[in-house]
Every structure is written in structure tokens, then in C-alpha cells.
Amino acid sequence: NASCAQALAVIRGWFLWMAIAGYVEFNVVSLVKNPRCPQHLPYVPTIEQVNSMINRVNEFRTQWPARDRAILEVLYGCGLLNCELTALNDDDIDFDKMSISVNERSGEKRRMFIGDLAADALRIYLDERTARLNGRPATSALFVNATSHCKRPDGVDRISATRVQRVVKGIAIQAGLSAETTPQTLRWAFAVHMIDRGADIEVVKCLMGVVSRKTTKMLRRLAIDRKSTRLN
Image 1 (spheres, rainbow, N blue to C red):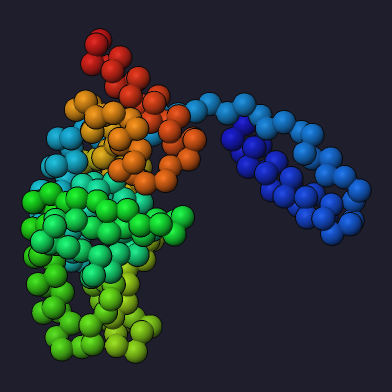
Image 2: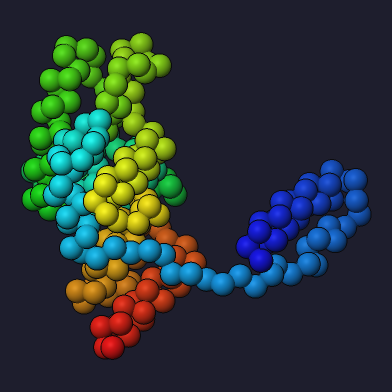
């Protein structure tokens, strides 16, 4: 059913274009209902699993342990989207106020507080980044690539969302977590673990930024599922 729904979405878009372009009088595919697809709850590791993964980064094979630990701390500690993390700049970090200014996809900004562990990880990474740049022009990007074969003339480039996804998945697998672990998994873990500790869903939604109705529905299902699991 999921494959059929995906194919139907493509066909529906194609017929919509043909209707707008005047090739057909009416988008007949709009009358076709999507097949009912089962909704699976996302994989959410436990607090102990996430902490173990982050604390053991130095034991794993990774290009830049200090950077990768800082990435994990910020993703999990602030519940950021992958695109929000990669868009962070140096001036978005305020160590005096222990906060990060996040650029949301809607164009708005939200302020997220960071804990001591995330702040310490960021300081260690930034010190190492300064040493690695070795006098090359500074970049505004907070997280940069570990290698210097970049397209920018100064040899420094912002880390991509694809690279972050590979970093998270690689460390998760080495830590014994599911191969399905992604930056979005850490965002779900941020939300679910707060709900587990008594946080209100509406508060969690505010901390996560702009969330869709689908995400809100999933959060409520996760909260109910976690509550029933604890009761059993």
C-alpha cells in the first residue's frame, strides 16, 4: 500500500500539471483515494542508549570525534532538525546565555538553551577546529567538514545534511543501536524523553519549533504508547 500511495502521488502530480497546462480538462486522478497505510511509530532509543552512544564517541571509528560528539549533543539536547543543525553559524552560539539561535524552515528564529555537556562538547570542538584551520580564513559555519578537499576557495566548507546523517548512523551502529538511527531519531528521542519525564506535549512542540499536524499526532501516539508501556 505504501508503494501504491507513492506511485499515486506521482501520477496525481503529473495529471495536475497536465490539467494546468491544458492537456486534459480535469485531473481525474484527484478522485482516486489513497490506499490506507499502516502508521508505524518511529524508533526511539532509550535515554541510556543515547547517553552511551554519545559518551563512547571517542571509542568508535569516526573522522572527527570532537566534532561528531558536539553534533550528537546538539541534535539530542536541542531536538534540532538536520537542516537546522547544518545551518548553524558561529554567531548563533551564545555561551554566556548558554543558548543557540536556530533558523527554522519557516524563516523564523527560536532560542534553545543548551546544557553543560553540549556546551563543553562545543568548546572542545571549536578549539580543535581553530587548530585544524591552521591560519586559513575562518568560516561562518559552525560545523565544517573534517577534510580540506572542499569546493570553497578557502578550503573550508559547511558540513552537509547527508554527512551528518552518515555520522549519526555510523556511530549508532557501532554503539549497538538500530541501523535505522538518524538525526530525526535523536529529535524524536529529545521529545519522547522529555514527555517521559513529565513535560507537556504543547511545551515540547514549542521547543521543537514549527511541527506539522502529522508530527503532533505522532507525538501524542508516542506519549500514549510510552505511558501504556510503563503501566504494563
